[in-house]
Amino acid sequence: ARLALPGIRELQPYQAGKPIEEVERELGISNIVKLASNENPLGVSPKVRDALAARISELARYPDANGFYLKQAIAEKFSVSTKQITLGNGSNDVLELLARTFVTPANEVIFAQHAFVVYPLVTKAIGAKPVAVPAKDYGHDLDAMLAAITDKTRMVFIANPNNPTGTFLTKEALEGFIKQVPNHVLVVLDEAYYEYVPQDERAPSLEWIQHYPNLVVSRTFSKAYGLAGLRAGYMVSHPAVADLMNRIRQPFNMNELALTASMAALEDDDFIARSVEVNRDGMAQLIRFCDHHNLPYIPSYGNFLTIETGPDSQALFTKLLHKGVIVRPVAGYELPNHLRVSIGLPQENDAFCNAMAEILNGQ
Ligand code: PMP
Image (cartoon, rainbow, N blue to C red; front, top):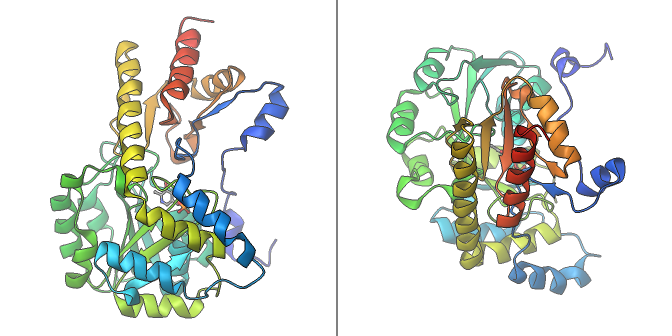
């Protein structure tokens, strides 16, 4: 262990939600409802299933190392050039690629307190200095993040909306921030939950790249597109940034099925619309429950709601688990009094609300 980079020795392994089957086996119960990993409760779109089925016979061959057709589809849909796109094995992969391309152990990387755990992870993995800036109202304190920039800063991560808080920065606030970030610092705008943001509130982030070449934007197929299990994400940047990332990217980092499914998913606007609608209704359902029981929550723009459940949140998590509902403790995000609940189907949200109500009634 002494041979490892100091930053790596300090790292804690990423705590992912356990697969449902494993929890069912451990607890000896079935019909578990998992609202723990911000997955799409509608599952995989039928159009994607068909596209995947038709592709199985090709799996003896290597995938297209450059993802030509998927890049073309993304470029057309979002009016960017294919030269601006880097594909990844999930957006985590492109976030890491970016850090490996630009950050050295002499650098500092800035992110907000309560921000997505992969930011400190990729920073420490490189041996660079992580700079966590205290949150404001659970969200990013952009002024404090600007003030934290030094000559050594190479990247600032902004998750919009953020996970696990669901907090959101307006386009005005964001552009005001990006304008002031010096050129030697990359602004990494992580838009994993972009599709859940109402159209009129979305930032024209991809257009901004033309004015701010140090801005990069990551998106994913894991959330609204319903493909978390396939691992597919991408980054849009200035072509020079994409060119550099492409040099260290593993060829074939996006597999044949991920390429195929992502392309079919991009075309399936109805599925995205339904996913967003189910999310909106489910969010309202959980908020009604919280309001009824006087449970404070952090207003969320994502597909999850982080609820202030008090100092016994770990015990509450376990009680919910034994009632067959898996949610996500967020103590590791310096939110020890909260639990994060992903929005599910109406009956899944009901299962959470009923289990919570029983626990609140002492049952
Ligand atoms: N960014 C944020 C803010 C996230 O919440 C997640 C998923 N937990 C990701 C990126 C990564 O998602 P994926 O690697 O599945 O694309």
